[in-house]
Amino acid sequence: MSILTVETMPIEGQKPGTSGLRKKTRVFVGTHFVENFVQAILDAIGGAAGKTFVLGGDGRYFSPQVAQVILRMCAAQGAKKVIVGQDALLSTPAASHLIRLNKTDGGFIMSASHNPGGLDEDFGLKFNMPNGGPAPEGVTDAIFAATKTISSYRILEAQDIDLDTLGETRLGEMAVQVVDPVADYADLMETLFDFPKLRALFAGGFRMRFDAMCAITGPYGTEILERRLGAPEGTVVNGTPLPDFGGMHPDPNPTWAHDLMDVMFGDDAPDFGAASDGDGDRNMVVGKNTYVSPSDSLAVLAANAHLAPGYRGGIAGVARSMPTSAAVDLVADAMGIGKFETPTGWKFFGNLLDAGKVTLCGEESFGTGSDHVREKDGLWAVLLWLNVLAERGETVAEVLESHWKAFGRNYYSRHDYEGLPVDVADGIVDPLRARLGELPGTTVEGMEIAAADDFAYTDPVDGSVSQMQGLRIVFADGSRFVIRLSGTGTEGATLRLYLERYVAGPEDLGLDVQAALAPVIAAAETLAGIKAASGRDGPNVVT
Ligand code: G1P
Ligand code: ZN
Image (cartoon, rainbow, N blue to C red; front, side, top):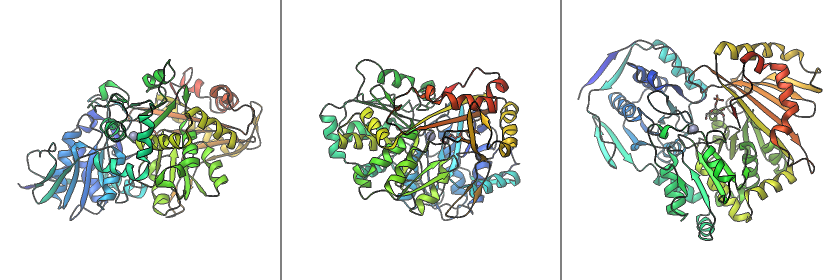
């Protein structure tokens, strides 16, 4: 086996976004595209020599081929070992766990998360650090810089190696250890949650539906819910990961997980429903006739985490992304623990978790997690909810109602305008940004603007600064809206409008969400003119 040095040239557009590099699969399959990006990663982290990495992904189309390329490049560049999930499969949280458990030098995750998969859909690749979390901006900037100057990459000339069989083999001088993708992760969950109590819950007839959306959490859900917790067979639906996710859009929200919503809002609904996304880091939880908004879910879990064995000692603090509702802040204030507001994207939580400043964190985009790994974790959130329901002996609706009674309710919704031409999206955001300074003190749709800015964040641990993270317009009554452009899309631009209004209660805690937000929606439209500029009647996804 010889090591080849292959000449190449920079390829445009290899800038990692909110979560790694995501592109149309047809772009990823292009000549040298994967190799250039992998070389840039290895260069940016100071080379592979002597290092151990984790490798896996959500099983989407093209992953098996990319896994072989990564292995051959690591082998050519002196890596000591790569730990690979069987068939190159690993959920994102399981990959994060393996990186930490084995004290490795990081890992490669092949996924475009909740984006559809297939030759005509999306592919993605990201690098996670030795702490198990996504590479921070300093590293992704260095990766991008390396993609712009690359002139060659090094790769081992070798046959594909067998990733179906568990155990250790060699590729050149490098060890390749193929591991069960589920076992270590499931063991970790057993240390955090009261499995005997959950077994008793299911034995007592508690009914649940977990929709894996033909993506990576199928095997994890089946092992944990059906095998270890004894939930009846069939609790997990769409449980086999497929390269194209069976044509589904594996994004667990009411729009894309509508089958689950129909069941949960239908006759004879189970007690609890949940879904996860392509790579297993997102979650949606639903009760009988009860949708739980992700921001509320984070707040409820923060208020109740102590009911699960892994968090019995209490939580150190909480963090949420800026567009996420402030519901969890109210819990933190009541508990007297720290609270942090970060830019969008899980990579901003890593430092806070590593420094022990926070235990739980979450985003409005169906992401919740804790310090057990350095990614958000879909099944973890589902198990924590189950643990809370089992301890409280209440339904999801009852848990939510008592939470709102205690803390008030942050009515919340996100309106997405997907697939806009980039210039149209910029034409909405840029003029509004230019006017931010003159808005405070003015009134729009009868609502007085108290503050307006473009969110900037200074990391309290390393002092790094991230600017232009979303336009915030806050009204005198505490309501607000936020506008930002997606950093994960692969085509055109997606404009996200986040809307929030707080009601202290005890009245008006059970309003229709969109109706409760109507004044904020109207003010946002007047200020930003999204419908007029986009030519759309309204958002195409509402969560
Ligand atoms: C979206 C979500 C964000 C999440 C990211 C990765 O990013 O909004 O909260 O961390 O996906 O799952 P965006 O497309 O908004 O940049
Ligand atoms: Zn994901």
